[in-house]
Figure (spheres, rainbow, N blue to C red):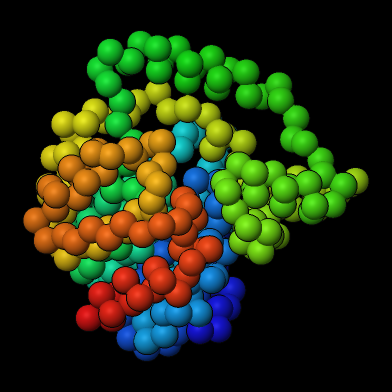
Length: 281
């Protein structure tokens, strides 16, 4: 499918992204943390027959950052995605999410079940949990990081080679996939390029739900759901946690295939075989 740029205005600012297709089921594709809409470029080539809209989530890619003093939270993300759907005129739609985007999509499916028809999550279901015992430490770390951030300066890259290498090393990405994310994830400045994402996205959140709360949310997802994970498991979603979460879905199916965290970029044809007919149903 031919991807084209789009933009919509929502209460927090202008949202940019990529979209493809004119007919068929409506699918909102939500990328991972510090990624952007280009995360779904390889997969889009294998998902004909749907309307695919992949926004740069707030603070990512070319979309607006939150206002000074505001914080990036799950609630802000869910409401922003609903505002995007409203701006598109989509009352109902399906969700396709990767990593952080999968967590946001999971929360949406549980929170607004009357709007979400189908759910596909890749490398994430329900979001990251925290233990009660870590509550005080998490608050201390989050506040200390937030107070220190204003004094930090953005690193300037002379060209795109260094950020491409950084993404390859950090995410086990091949060069082509890393370049897609980098080209949409930087902006030009004097002397080269800097990351375009909001530095506040790197701050740890002071609050996370615990595993019991996340389990209750996953159990509250009533729409048909497909879960795709890579083998070997990533550290944040080890076994048996990820299988146990998937088993809580009232109407879910789990697929585990060989790959890395960005398997939808590096093996898009195989991932599309698992989710394409599901999304088109």
